[in-house]
View 1 (cartoon, one colour):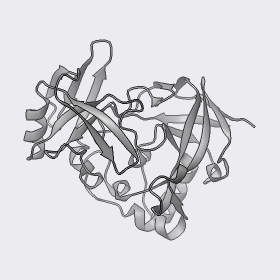
View 2 (spheres, one colour):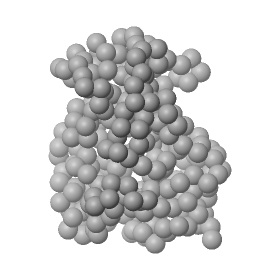
View 3 (spheres, rainbow, N blue to C red):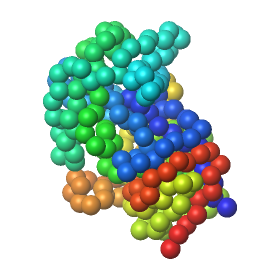
Length: 263
């Protein structure tokens, strides 16, 4: 029997991955997942190569009060507004999607810039689907993580793949054969799509951000290359690990929920 072993979400893209006990999945994915993002002085999102710089930062979002709290590595907690009251602009993300974003004013620009040693601002994503790059949901299985760990010769945490759902399944890479299948997880129904083409972020420690494992080298050796779904970024292929999914029926998903493969 396949069950939900772990849940994951991150309110601010590129910061510490969180592990709640339950999530609400709507048409755009896990609710509030990547609602916010960090931008550089040029108004562009922090590049994937620099995501590890911000993994030590832990953000929490209080939707009822529309506020954010940030826990810094030294334990200091900064609280402030989450409302998008600053300048707005459109950001084109690698021609995949265009986001409308607006700066979140308050203490964030100073705190983030002081931490990074360069100008960094916090923005809220106003477009549907927030700052999720491709499809609304990704999941990874414990069986596939065990296989990767064996190939690599070291433990590999699920958080390196920043997937919303970690499914406990003893069969290694069984999900490779689920493309097009519907799966029922808790009260939500998802349609499985292709594997996720990976990048060098997987080699970063999900807590401290340092590059400590050559995950990509191992994936190149034993996993087939995978293109993005629906013709996005044509010609771009890297080894696939974890799986994309679309939302067919929204609903609540909790730790321990059973996963049912439908027709």
